[in-house]
Image (cartoon, rainbow, N blue to C red; front, side):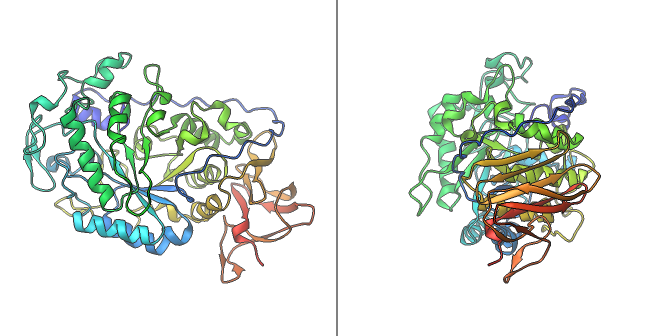
Length: 492
């Protein structure tokens, strides 16, 4: 959960919304020399990218795993919090009600326990892992009835938590420069759990292990900076192995680093979201200054094997919308870069359309989420956009391969390879790149351009490119578009 989330702050803390700080546009860089080959990136938790299916119902995710995500090479789905949440009927069921737990029953506006378990099974069968968004820092902010019918009051959740299980600082965080306040006081009115106590830890471990028993393979843990690292480590350290794998679940933590909290404080517990990447890459594609991206890892706070990276997520879409689905091809090409460049574990988002940043997903009158339908403009389905869908397979094909053959024009045109497994060209400028020759490390042959199509039944559904015996390829790239070739889409 991001802070400040303007609507959430206004709704629960009674403070006026303050506009997010404007992004600083970097100056256009001089042409960069080709960087030395980067070391091979660490092995990601899954072979394909993670996609956050934000607010998608369980039945719809199951269907999408079978029809699209598995076949296209996506590795894992991050699902919205599966525990019982508060129902904010009088506020038209905003998206953030799902981040206010009421109990650990698996009953939400997206489906019940049986539907959740069926979804996990269907996705695992399709080769797609399930990572659950876990909310363990806090419970709900007000008295209400939960999505499973649980009547509760703040600091009293029948059969689960009572007053003694919540932090003594019963007020909002007032000073974000005070680490004690950040970790012990309330985040926009949400009742802060005493995660240092054995009872609270045991209850949370039990909830997460219940999800693991259903086949959940990992967790994105919300609001981690609001818990001491040792509390987080104690919870993670007591989780069971994922059935039939012999492995512990993959854990990644939402940490919005600042002068008080560093991402590195939590990296011993699992991977961490690298918000610096969102700022760097999103701004570069927003203004077209791509040449500055040659050495991205040098400007990040985390090493590649500890970072989860993204162009946008459900919070930045609303509170810091540098690039979102509303930005069209600039957004698509930024995601293509993320899926091609060897830094971090990439996380995409597939979301619903909104104008009001508080708005919940498409739903019936009682707040029950409607089935996701990518033919309906109410559901954005970013993961199905041709460039993004094609690059999921590219990412899968180049796992572990080093950065090679970097080229840029000093401005908005770049190209680079991933060893002998892939090569990508991105033209963020309006003008065409006509008959441009690039040096690659690909074996000679004819390749499908996966930004415009796919390899199906032995032929390309989009454009093709010919790599010569010396590894060179000559191609024309239209303005604001790209070309991507990889070994898994090579004609025999």
